Image 1 (cartoon, rainbow, N blue to C red):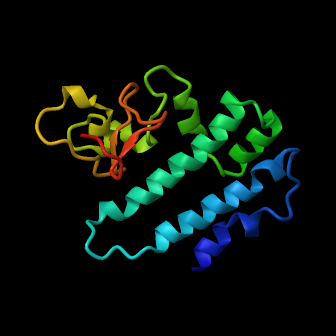
Image 2 (spheres, one colour):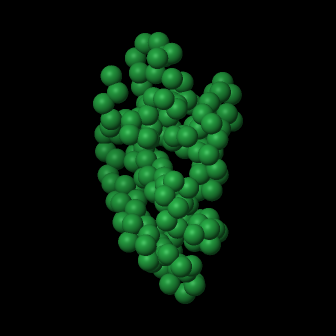
Length: 166
């Protein structure tokens, strides 16, 4: 509980000078933080070990996508504010930079493309288009993403384990 409190935005940001536009996103970031806390504290009885992390990956994606859309798509936040969010590690700069590259527009997580974390040195199953998969379609064990390949997404995002995908 102490480590979660130490990482809280409410605890680590009050003394820092926030750039212009912070008030526009502050409430949403606190809401994401509350939802993340709930996902972390959610009991994982009856779930596989990896399944308990799936909601955390999804919330991480949603928070970063919210900031990405505000900055790159809608131009509603300034470069100063975006840099502040990156510097304070509120957003994942590596993931957001991948979204700007062709083929990675709806990438679910950096874990999906890290080849060192798989048994055969390949990317995650969620990077394979649904049309090219044989057999039963299952979510990625690591992230809970079914497909984050450009073209397979639902409403501009990846297909998650909770989405209807058949």
